[in-house]
Image (cartoon, rainbow, N blue to C red; front, side, top):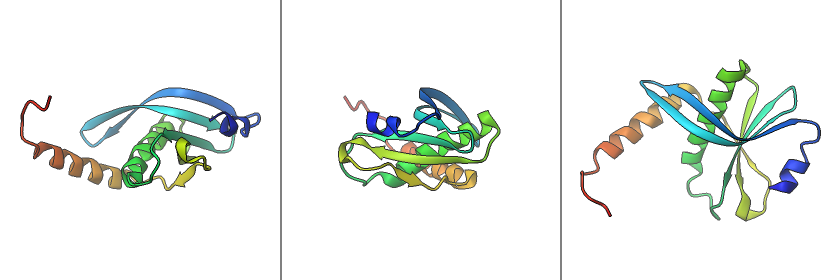
Length: 123
């Protein structure tokens, strides 16, 4: 991660930034791993420790939520989103920031899927 941070030059760098975003009737809370603001563009990074990209679609929703929360907080639309798979040793992957209606659809689908899980003691 240090090699990534060293490349940001004079940009403002923030770590572990709490965020919130209303999505429909649900308030989503999270912690953004890294925000980089170079004055023109704000980049939101989420670090992942997995060694494969199987969950890329789900993580794209997560980092899009982070990007939208930064857009609302800063009043700017020029926010980019990245997933950084640290164990792969590669550059971060830029992810298209999903529109809010797509995020709402995914959240509703997730709610439906989790409501179908029977109540039980899963310990």
